[in-house]
Image (cartoon, rainbow, N blue to C red; front, side, top):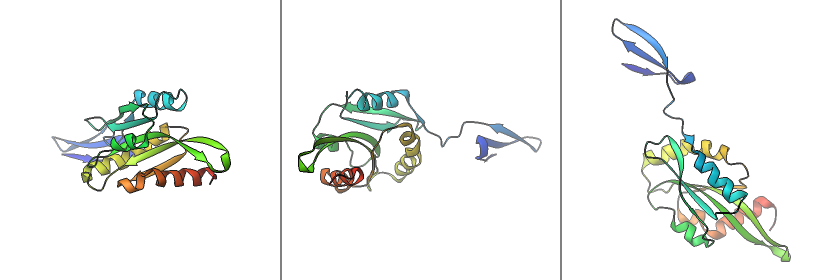
Length: 168
């Protein structure tokens, strides 16, 4: 018999002879961010090597890894990478025009993609793991939670990014 006890990653284990032993083990709910995930973000942010990054959880759901990077600048190409029935995280280097002839701006946008049609377990795991990735990515301007494609449409993101930048 194992009785989970989350404080300090401790687990009470019941052993024969009616003895309880307190053991420490890794918390199965904690997800790590892979080094490659941080490197890809820094390549996008500092080196402008990527236009977007799609992240996923590895098969054992213990680490956030890079699924794909792209230099494709077409926003629709990015949207095509978001699956209809599965969750993902994404970073997009969003470029837009400022009114009044002031030129272009770039904002790094973090997406949590959790479509309504995704399995409930997947939505729960991605929701509980989001903060690990989000805290590791310094320099993100805007966070977007998308459950359907209308919430991640170009015009929707443009409005949120422009409002956040105070430039309309």
